[in-house]
Image 1 (cartoon, rainbow, N blue to C red):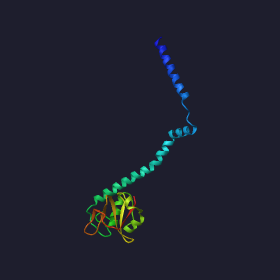
Image 2 (cartoon, helix red, strand yellow):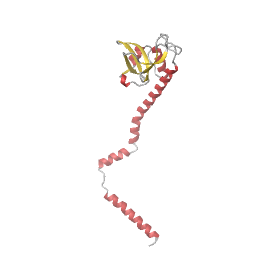
Image 3 (spheres, rainbow, N blue to C red):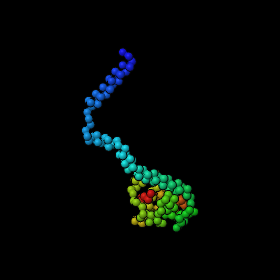
Image 4 (tube, one colour):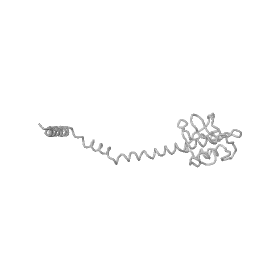
Length: 179
């Protein structure tokens, strides 16, 4: 037998085996086939990706803003406290928080009480760096700071102390989110 004849016999046998496999394989139910083809269609995938894209963009924007807030807060370490000052040479607590947040593209009201009123209240357990810590006496908000993580805050403390990174030591405080 010639090599051409052997090649054509092998080709024919392979072709028959493939056809036999197609004939023997059970057909998928119509609903399963529709689901499979819909899931595999190119049009279905961009819808899924585009639904996730805004959330991913929002998370990336918040992360960039938090990075700006914390780096700006750290650069201002040691600036003196002065009642009513909004920076950049001196700050009071709400002036400091407003200045830092403004650098991240977020405008806040002038006073700590107004900043508290404009923030979204969150549980202390849900706090993330970049959130705000509001110190209270009863229902009155008297001080505000930027949460740095791990129980620490950046704030313009009081006259003679200036801007510093300290631990939260007060017992009466609330958390708010503006970014």
